[in-house]
Image (cartoon, rainbow, N blue to C red; front, side):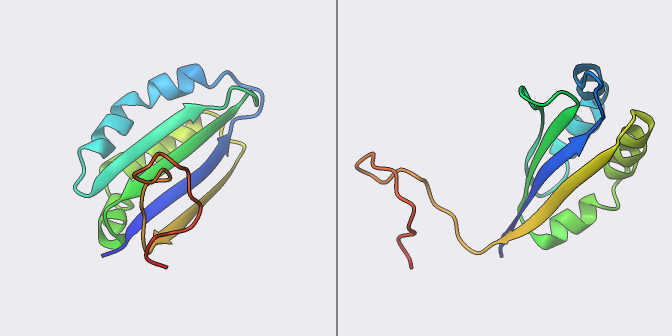
Length: 115
């Protein structure tokens, strides 16, 4: 079973995104409780006002599919539109393998040990 990563950004013009993120807290917490959710992180970009970075990690395509029809997702979509969303670039990635950046000796490595 391959993990799925969701990564990208959502823009809200020149708005302060702090209250938007605070308002989304309940929906973010609901998502963390969904089966298969490993990470569900929303963060303000410190260099670009109005931008929120999204990072999600799901155990499988099936658990992501369940999330995309869940109440938390549907409510979040409405909340973001209501909050002044002006654009977004968010992609999904199917992960064939993963391993730590640092090996057992503490050296950062770009290559994968099984390739």
